[in-house]
Length: 162
Image 1: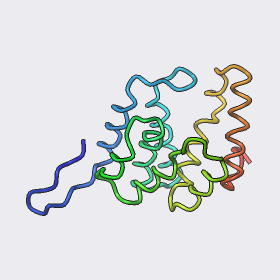
Image 2 (image 1 turned 60 degrees about the horizontal axis):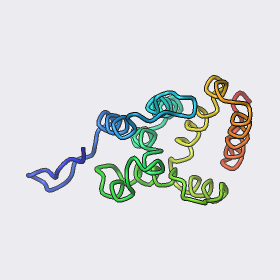
Image 3 (image 1 turned 90 degrees about the vertical axis):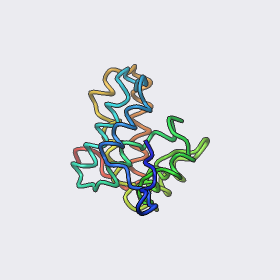
Image 4 (image 1 turned 45 degrees about the vertical axis):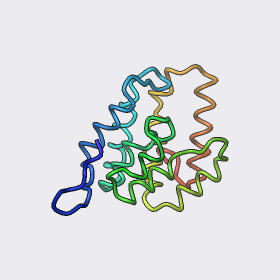
């Protein structure tokens, strides 16, 4: 899905949002979320959440791809070479947790990357949706609720509904 350089200019054209969405859906094909739903539903919800929060096309593209590298659906090398803006790449990279990384370090990287906090806010909002959490067993629901609340606090985000 990476476009070749134009014969006229030698410059690689950027993937459109439609192409980014199609790519994200393709690389996550067959994956399910913790609730057993198709993973692409989560990506679509995060992208819609970014749009609803006033996010721009670069942030929406990052929303579609925010878990792709972390989930090994796409490699870091792919991201480096992808026909995406530097800002979209930076947001995706910031949102990619590193193995063994402490939440405080992860949150600092998100806060230091322009545009990443809004994408993470939309991600957390969907992850913490009571309807999604309701289908999980109580220990998992409790653990995830606490995890999401802690990340919201580290990012300086108000609790939903407050």
